[in-house]
Amino acid sequence: MCHDARVGRHCVRAAHPGVLIAVLAAAGISVSLMQTLIIPLVPELPVLLNTSPADASWAITVTLLTAAVTTPVFGRLGDLFGPKPILMVCAGALTIGSLVAATTSSLVPFIVGRGLQGLGIPIIPLAISVLRASIPAERVGSAMGLISASLGVGGALGLPLAALIAERFNWHTLFWFAAGLGACSLLLFFVVVPRVPARSTDRLDPLGTVLLTVGLVSLLLAISKGSAWGWLSTTTLALLAASAVVFVLFASWQFRTASPVVDLRTTLKRPVLTTNVASVAIGFAMFAMSLIGPQILELPTQTGFGLGQSMLHAGLWMAPGGLAMMIAAPIAARVASTHGPKVTFVVGGLMITGAYGAGFFLLNNPVQVMVFNALISLGVGFAYASMPALINAAVPVSETAAANGVNALARSLGTSMSSAVIGAVLSTMTMPFAGHSVPSLDGFRAAVLVAAAAAGMAVVIALTIPTPPAQTVSELPPRTWTRRTRL
Image 1 (tube, one colour):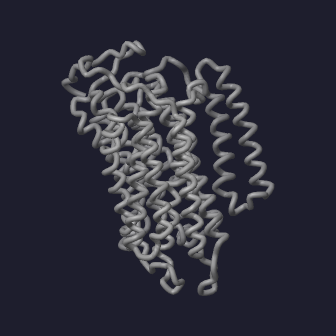
Image 2 (cartoon, rainbow, N blue to C red):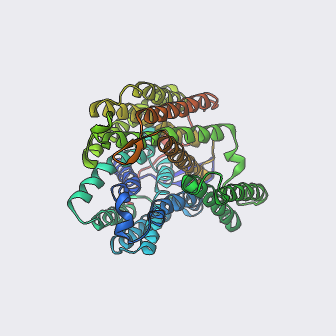
Image 3 (tube, rainbow, N blue to C red):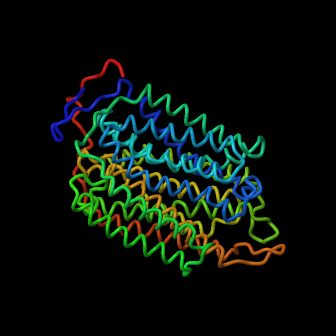
């Protein structure tokens, strides 16, 4: 055990920090796989579930909604009750949701299963909270960077893995595989993760939780469905207006209650606010490549610019991006230890901006697209690795999981906006082909420029982040630690 005098509470050192880091990183990768495993099925979902394309799209949307809502809420629960039990709840929900999806061919239960899978996303901020409290200070930076980057790594590796499984086996196998990953995570959390004491004596805020849920659901529904419903449709505008009103009520209540679900006084501090806003832009830029790369790889060569790859081959060409992101995380941690996480974030943003600039000319063959994606992934790895350090330097230990949950929500908001904006660009700038409209080369190049602008905006915002002190509040002097003999 160790004692943290800043919060007057005890923290627990893991008996085997390396094993703990590996388990949490693997869990983060598994969670992010859930978001990409379904991609090979998207064109076939209406037939597989015997429903319309509009209804089938809810299988994607519901995961986004549950992840967005539960990430900050479960992060707060982790601070109130300790991260280990909440981690196990997340892994259990992910497992149950995967089992439901694996055993049904009906729309409603499938959507329920996909919604439960979204409850796995809070594992990322909860894992960061565990690491902050239970491993030696000199390993915190690199470990948190690895966990943060795991979300992108799993997303990059998920597409070829999902395509391979979908091509060789029944589509339900994807979800049996996901259930196995969830069950393994649950078991490893129980065995390996130390029981970190609660960091806060506050109570849960039921009204704030409801208001946050309604506001986020309204906003994300408008963003994710706006292109289908029409951006100026009554439904879209009503949802946007409702989210604005609810967020005003939410903010008013959070400033008045003694136990807010999101401490806005901390969230609106300049270091936290600027980091989160910059994270939205990085999330936008990261996800743009996930929309641009696979499409141009899979378009037929008869279009004049398509590269004619199968879904499996397209996924394999994109997979090195995940490896690049994983390689970037420890390098970024070393840069951050020398020059600070702000510099690391700025370097990552500049790498992404430069990669998109070069990518304007790297769409001619699969190798170029692979290099293009790997360069972006390196930059994302740098940026993602620095985010937890920037957040933790500005928040008290009692709000570690909640604050990182909000940061994860910011990234998710960025990916949702990217899906809407890049999707709109590619669906507007089209050309006729074989009786259908497909994105044109000019459309892809315009999307590249939009993503470059988002990354450049992230750099500008990151430059305004106040430089944190050399030793953040997440670091505890090594001499305060004594090893636990067992978990």
